[in-house]
Image (tube, rainbow, N blue to C red; front, side, top):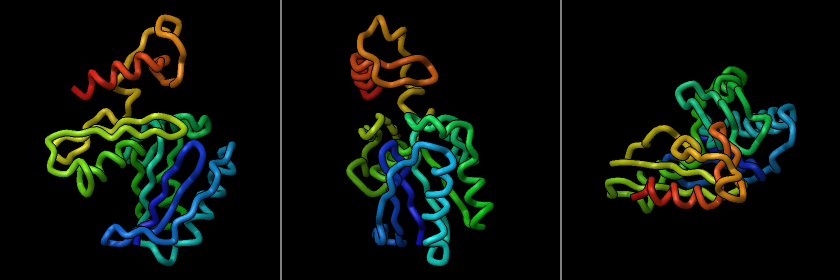
Length: 185
């Protein structure tokens, strides 16, 4: 069994996933507002399943180094900046931990087991507290990993209402829609 954890801006959702991708023991916690509460909740979740699992899979918003389980910037969750999420949990619980961008996780799952199977390329647009985009080609994830890495926006004043802060500036509703159309063509 794998403990799957989806870190979102509103909730941290989790459950056990078996070899046939059946989900059991699923639940959720409100996403905390501080890093200390975040670690406390995450460690409590893992502790409650430690004896039943062989690894941990985490989907997290933002810019992620999946190879090292490092969160550079956790999307709209301000305290998820420069944290060794995978390394920390792996050391504490002595289990393998995989961390991936949440939109990339959705796209990869759809490409392997869902509606994007047998397509040359596809996209998963994830709408939650924030917005994410995962792209796949021939069943493999395309990088860079998040929509903010595909899109570049001029100043928010030139494009209208700002909806998404990013390390590149701001994305407006109009620019986001136009850029998604361009990327997906």
